[in-house]
Amino acid sequence: MSGHSKWSTIKRKKEKTDNQRAKIFTKMGREIAVAVREGGPDPAGNSKLKDVIAKAKANNVPNDNIERIIKKAAGDGGGADYEDIIYEGYGPSGVAVVVETLTDNRNRTAGEMRHYFDKYGGNMGQSGSVMFMFSRQGVILIESEDIDEEKLMDTALEAGAADFLADEGIFDIRTEPNDVGAVSEALEKAGYAIVSAEAEYIPSTYVALTNPDDIKNMSKMLEMFEDNDDVQAVFHNWEE
Image 1: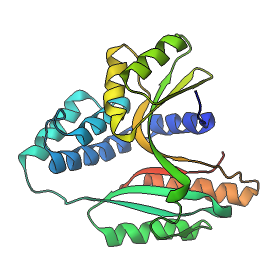
Image 2: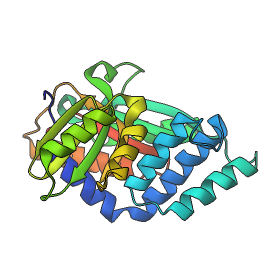
Image 3: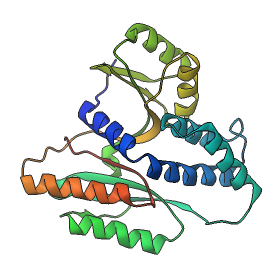
Image 4: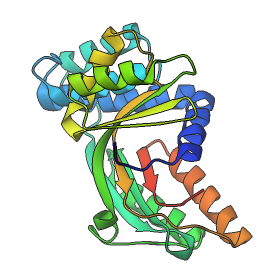
Protein backbone atom coordinates (compact mmCIF):
# COMPACT_ATOMS: atom_id res chain seq x y z
CA MET A 1 0.00 0.00 0.00
CA SER A 2 1.24 3.48 -0.76
CA GLY A 3 1.35 6.39 1.65
CA HIS A 4 3.45 8.15 4.22
CA SER A 5 3.02 8.71 7.93
CA LYS A 6 5.12 10.35 10.64
CA TRP A 7 5.25 7.89 13.51
CA SER A 8 6.94 10.35 15.88
CA THR A 9 4.07 12.78 15.29
CA ILE A 10 1.54 10.04 16.00
CA LYS A 11 3.23 9.14 19.28
CA ARG A 12 3.50 12.80 20.30
CA LYS A 13 -0.19 13.25 19.51
CA LYS A 14 -1.14 10.23 21.61
CA GLU A 15 0.96 11.50 24.55
CA LYS A 16 -0.70 14.92 24.37
CA THR A 17 -4.11 13.26 24.20
CA ASP A 18 -3.36 11.33 27.36
CA ASN A 19 -2.10 14.44 29.14
CA GLN A 20 -4.96 16.77 28.15
CA ARG A 21 -7.98 14.54 28.72
CA ALA A 22 -10.19 17.13 30.46
CA LYS A 23 -9.58 19.79 27.80
CA ILE A 24 -10.27 17.24 25.05
CA PHE A 25 -13.59 16.33 26.69
CA THR A 26 -14.59 20.00 26.60
CA LYS A 27 -13.60 20.41 22.95
CA MET A 28 -15.33 17.20 21.91
CA GLY A 29 -18.48 18.33 23.72
CA ARG A 30 -18.52 21.53 21.70
CA GLU A 31 -18.03 19.61 18.45
CA ILE A 32 -20.83 17.16 19.24
CA ALA A 33 -23.21 19.99 20.13
CA VAL A 34 -22.52 21.78 16.85
CA ALA A 35 -23.06 18.59 14.85
CA VAL A 36 -26.42 17.99 16.60
CA ARG A 37 -27.63 21.54 15.97
CA GLU A 38 -26.64 21.35 12.32
CA GLY A 39 -28.01 17.90 11.46
CA GLY A 40 -30.11 16.57 14.32
CA PRO A 41 -29.48 14.14 17.21
CA ASP A 42 -29.69 10.85 15.28
CA PRO A 43 -26.26 9.72 14.03
CA ALA A 44 -27.95 7.35 11.56
CA GLY A 45 -29.19 10.37 9.64
CA ASN A 46 -26.39 12.78 10.58
CA SER A 47 -23.06 11.63 9.14
CA LYS A 48 -21.17 14.51 10.72
CA LEU A 49 -22.46 13.55 14.18
CA LYS A 50 -21.59 9.91 13.51
CA ASP A 51 -18.01 10.88 12.70
CA VAL A 52 -17.72 13.14 15.75
CA ILE A 53 -19.05 10.37 18.02
CA ALA A 54 -16.41 8.01 16.60
CA LYS A 55 -13.76 10.65 17.27
CA ALA A 56 -15.05 11.18 20.82
CA LYS A 57 -15.03 7.46 21.58
CA ALA A 58 -11.49 7.16 20.24
CA ASN A 59 -10.55 9.92 22.69
CA ASN A 60 -12.13 7.90 25.52
CA VAL A 61 -15.08 10.22 26.08
CA PRO A 62 -17.59 8.07 28.04
CA ASN A 63 -20.82 7.07 26.30
CA ASP A 64 -22.83 8.72 29.10
CA ASN A 65 -21.11 12.03 28.42
CA ILE A 66 -21.78 11.74 24.69
CA GLU A 67 -25.46 10.95 25.20
CA ARG A 68 -25.86 13.78 27.71
CA ILE A 69 -24.32 16.32 25.31
CA ILE A 70 -26.52 15.12 22.44
CA LYS A 71 -29.70 15.38 24.55
CA LYS A 72 -28.77 18.83 25.80
CA ALA A 73 -27.97 20.12 22.31
CA ALA A 74 -31.18 18.65 20.89
CA GLY A 75 -33.32 19.92 23.75
CA ASP A 76 -32.55 23.62 23.70
CA GLY A 77 -32.12 26.09 20.92
CA GLY A 78 -30.09 28.40 23.08
CA GLY A 79 -26.48 28.29 24.02
CA ALA A 80 -23.54 29.66 22.12
CA ASP A 81 -23.79 29.87 18.35
CA TYR A 82 -20.51 28.36 17.15
CA GLU A 83 -19.09 28.53 13.64
CA ASP A 84 -16.30 26.58 11.98
CA ILE A 85 -13.38 28.75 10.89
CA ILE A 86 -10.07 27.50 9.50
CA TYR A 87 -6.95 29.64 9.85
CA GLU A 88 -3.88 29.14 7.70
CA GLY A 89 -0.37 30.44 7.98
CA TYR A 90 3.33 29.79 8.29
CA GLY A 91 5.47 29.00 11.29
CA PRO A 92 9.26 29.50 11.53
CA SER A 93 11.22 28.73 8.34
CA GLY A 94 8.10 28.24 6.27
CA VAL A 95 6.36 25.43 8.19
CA ALA A 96 2.76 25.30 6.90
CA VAL A 97 0.07 25.36 9.61
CA VAL A 98 -3.70 24.74 9.42
CA VAL A 99 -5.81 25.49 12.50
CA GLU A 100 -9.41 24.29 12.83
CA THR A 101 -11.55 26.29 15.26
CA LEU A 102 -15.10 26.38 16.61
CA THR A 103 -15.83 29.86 17.88
CA ASP A 104 -18.68 32.02 19.12
CA ASN A 105 -16.62 35.18 18.56
CA ARG A 106 -14.64 35.27 15.32
CA ASN A 107 -12.97 38.60 16.14
CA ARG A 108 -11.55 37.25 19.40
CA THR A 109 -10.40 34.02 17.81
CA ALA A 110 -8.84 35.68 14.76
CA GLY A 111 -6.91 38.06 17.03
CA GLU A 112 -5.60 35.21 19.16
CA MET A 113 -4.60 33.08 16.16
CA ARG A 114 -2.76 36.00 14.55
CA HIS A 115 -0.99 36.72 17.85
CA TYR A 116 0.30 33.14 18.12
CA PHE A 117 1.62 33.19 14.56
CA ASP A 118 3.32 36.56 15.02
CA LYS A 119 4.74 35.90 18.48
CA TYR A 120 6.64 32.78 17.44
CA GLY A 121 8.18 33.86 14.15
CA GLY A 122 5.40 33.06 11.73
CA ASN A 123 2.59 34.87 9.98
CA MET A 124 -1.10 34.22 9.40
CA GLY A 125 -2.09 34.00 5.75
CA GLN A 126 -5.24 34.26 3.68
CA SER A 127 -7.61 31.37 3.02
CA GLY A 128 -5.88 28.96 0.63
CA SER A 129 -2.38 30.21 1.39
CA VAL A 130 -1.16 26.80 2.64
CA MET A 131 -4.15 24.49 2.12
CA PHE A 132 -2.87 23.43 -1.31
CA MET A 133 -0.08 21.57 0.50
CA PHE A 134 -2.54 19.34 2.37
CA SER A 135 -5.14 16.72 1.48
CA ARG A 136 -8.18 15.90 3.61
CA GLN A 137 -8.19 12.26 4.72
CA GLY A 138 -9.82 10.15 7.39
CA VAL A 139 -7.16 8.78 9.74
CA ILE A 140 -7.78 5.87 12.13
CA LEU A 141 -4.95 4.81 14.43
CA ILE A 142 -4.64 1.46 16.17
CA GLU A 143 -1.67 0.60 18.39
CA SER A 144 -0.81 -2.96 19.40
CA GLU A 145 2.10 -5.38 19.19
CA ASP A 146 -0.19 -8.42 19.05
CA ILE A 147 -2.36 -7.68 16.01
CA ASP A 148 -2.40 -9.89 12.92
CA GLU A 149 -1.51 -7.20 10.37
CA GLU A 150 -2.95 -9.02 7.36
CA LYS A 151 -6.24 -9.71 9.12
CA LEU A 152 -6.57 -6.07 10.25
CA MET A 153 -5.80 -4.84 6.73
CA ASP A 154 -8.44 -7.14 5.22
CA THR A 155 -11.02 -6.01 7.80
CA ALA A 156 -10.23 -2.34 7.20
CA LEU A 157 -10.39 -2.59 3.41
CA GLU A 158 -13.64 -4.56 3.54
CA ALA A 159 -15.08 -1.82 5.76
CA GLY A 160 -14.25 0.81 3.14
CA ALA A 161 -10.71 1.97 3.99
CA ALA A 162 -8.69 3.49 1.14
CA ASP A 163 -5.17 2.84 2.42
CA PHE A 164 -3.31 0.97 5.14
CA LEU A 165 0.08 1.78 6.71
CA ALA A 166 1.93 -0.11 9.42
CA ASP A 167 5.12 0.42 11.40
CA GLU A 168 6.40 -0.31 14.91
CA GLY A 169 3.11 -1.72 16.17
CA ILE A 170 1.11 1.31 14.99
CA PHE A 171 -1.48 0.86 12.24
CA ASP A 172 -2.59 3.91 10.28
CA ILE A 173 -5.79 3.33 8.31
CA ARG A 174 -6.81 5.97 5.77
CA THR A 175 -10.33 6.61 4.52
CA GLU A 176 -12.26 9.19 2.57
CA PRO A 177 -13.04 12.07 4.98
CA ASN A 178 -16.73 11.17 5.25
CA ASP A 179 -16.07 7.45 5.80
CA VAL A 180 -13.97 7.66 8.97
CA GLY A 181 -16.94 7.11 11.30
CA ALA A 182 -18.29 4.06 9.47
CA VAL A 183 -14.87 2.40 9.10
CA SER A 184 -13.96 3.13 12.73
CA GLU A 185 -17.27 1.65 13.90
CA ALA A 186 -16.68 -1.51 11.83
CA LEU A 187 -13.19 -1.94 13.30
CA GLU A 188 -14.50 -1.49 16.84
CA LYS A 189 -17.19 -4.13 16.20
CA ALA A 190 -14.40 -6.44 14.99
CA GLY A 191 -12.71 -6.01 18.39
CA TYR A 192 -9.99 -3.48 17.63
CA ALA A 193 -9.18 -0.68 20.11
CA ILE A 194 -9.02 2.70 18.37
CA VAL A 195 -6.38 5.26 19.47
CA SER A 196 -7.89 8.07 17.39
CA ALA A 197 -10.31 8.45 14.49
CA GLU A 198 -10.88 11.73 12.69
CA ALA A 199 -10.61 13.57 9.41
CA GLU A 200 -7.24 15.32 9.19
CA TYR A 201 -5.26 17.53 6.85
CA ILE A 202 -2.28 15.46 5.68
CA PRO A 203 0.71 17.35 4.23
CA SER A 204 2.15 16.35 0.86
CA THR A 205 5.66 17.50 1.84
CA TYR A 206 7.45 18.11 5.13
CA VAL A 207 9.82 20.83 6.40
CA ALA A 208 12.75 19.98 8.68
CA LEU A 209 13.85 22.57 11.24
CA THR A 210 17.52 22.63 12.24
CA ASN A 211 17.83 25.99 14.01
CA PRO A 212 17.26 25.50 17.80
CA ASP A 213 15.34 28.79 18.02
CA ASP A 214 13.03 27.73 15.19
CA ILE A 215 12.40 24.38 16.88
CA LYS A 216 11.66 26.10 20.20
CA ASN A 217 9.33 28.66 18.61
CA MET A 218 7.48 26.06 16.56
CA SER A 219 6.93 23.91 19.67
CA LYS A 220 5.67 26.93 21.63
CA MET A 221 3.37 27.99 18.79
CA LEU A 222 1.77 24.54 18.64
CA GLU A 223 1.32 24.52 22.42
CA MET A 224 -0.47 27.89 22.29
CA PHE A 225 -2.82 26.72 19.55
CA GLU A 226 -3.60 23.42 21.28
CA ASP A 227 -4.26 25.09 24.65
CA ASN A 228 -6.77 27.54 23.15
CA ASP A 229 -10.37 26.51 23.89
CA ASP A 230 -11.54 27.63 20.43
CA VAL A 231 -9.03 25.39 18.63
CA GLN A 232 -10.28 21.92 17.74
CA ALA A 233 -7.23 20.66 15.84
CA VAL A 234 -3.88 21.82 14.46
CA PHE A 235 -2.15 20.34 11.41
CA HIS A 236 1.31 21.18 10.08
CA ASN A 237 4.11 19.86 7.89
CA TRP A 238 6.95 20.11 10.42
CA GLU A 239 9.08 17.00 10.23
CA GLU A 240 9.68 16.61 13.97
